[in-house]
Image (tube, rainbow, N blue to C red; front, side, top):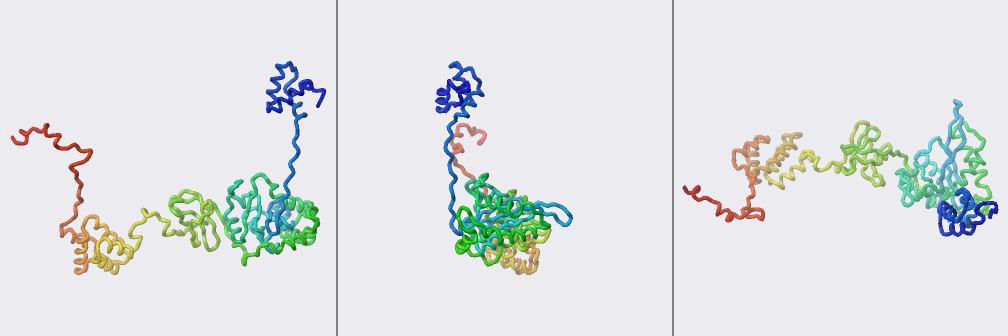
Amino acid sequence: MDKRSGCAQYASEILAAHAQGLSGRRIYQDLGDAGFTGSYASVKRFLQRNRETSPPVPFRRLIKLAGQEMQVDYGQGAWVRDERGRRRKTHLLCCVLSFSRRIYCEVSYRQDSESFIRGMENAFRHFCGVTATVVIDNLKAGVIRPCNFDPVLNPKCHDFAMHYGTCILPCRPRIPWHKGRVENVVGYVQNNALAGRTFPSVNAQNTFLWTWQDKVSDHRFHGTEKRHVIDMYQEEKASLQPLPASIFPAFSEEMRKVHSDGHVEVQGAYYSVPPEYTSQEVWACHDGRHVRIMSKDLKELALHARQERGRTSTAAGHVPPVKVYLPERGSHWLLEQIEKSIGPGARAWGETVVLSRQAAAPKVLHGLLHLRKAHAAATIEFVCNLAITRGETCYQALKALLEERGDKRQPALPFQSEHELIRPLKEYNHLIDYKDIFP
């Protein structure tokens, strides 16, 4: 305790009040009532010097099993000075097996999803196997929606994990020590391999890194484990999952907004999605052959064959039923509806129309179905049989035959004499002047 402080004679009162949870401002106010003449700053300094410090909580040492985890992170690589003398920045991708601490590194000019995925894929190939989980940072190339509990992966990273049979687990946002092994590896590679070096190209830098890995980093002695890294890797290698038969197929992904016509534009062509996603944002994943449309939660919505620029691909189920013009359904569907709603004679007439009118047949068949709203099915059936005998295949001729029959169905208007909202007629008897009725 500092005896020179003006708070020394009030030390017990100040510490007791602070132990009760009172603020420094409140303690200063109470001391003023007790005759304290010092300043509020003096009270603050006294509390800071005499604050009880709790013992530090030790970090938990996480033990990882063989083949359980690979950690991945980015750092800055060495500068590249190209043939034109320009200095270009590179991104250093480091992957480390959490059990054996064996590392794989490579550099690239970009930190996009394609470079990120190819780097992890090269790491699996270098390690001759796949870990059960992969811990990554919340970089945009891997995560589109960070979350402590259920982060949303980039579609390409999601498919990459499915292809290799692993699970990508982003660490919690702003807590990098959850992947402390690779954090240390990034600094180790920067300081021991790349510091003070400049390379003429990315390929030259990667060639240097891979040689350095084989000759230096794989044979380093790990201070915590008291073993060489290459020896621990030989133990872990048998626990890694086997590599798939093929590499991960290359494709590009883009966020697109669905137009008002229910299509998204991808590389100048247009592809349909279910109507309920109109005006929403979706993922469009495409390669040289297919375009796959996915929702924000990575649910597949549609799969289309790749189209040329300016072309449109529309799936049949993506057009709302109210927007489907009946002739678009085709003559076969229309003939089935005619037989169901009218009869076999009407279908027979429709089949003659299909044979003779060809491209115009669907619209004529649509007109035949429309007649059902104003005429009885039996009447239409009779007229269709008559039209067949006369060789008539024109809608106007069929309509004229129906007018000759003169039995156009009139819509019946419902009439109710009794209803809860209608007053009974007998209540009006006393208002009727019979002299007006019987003069």
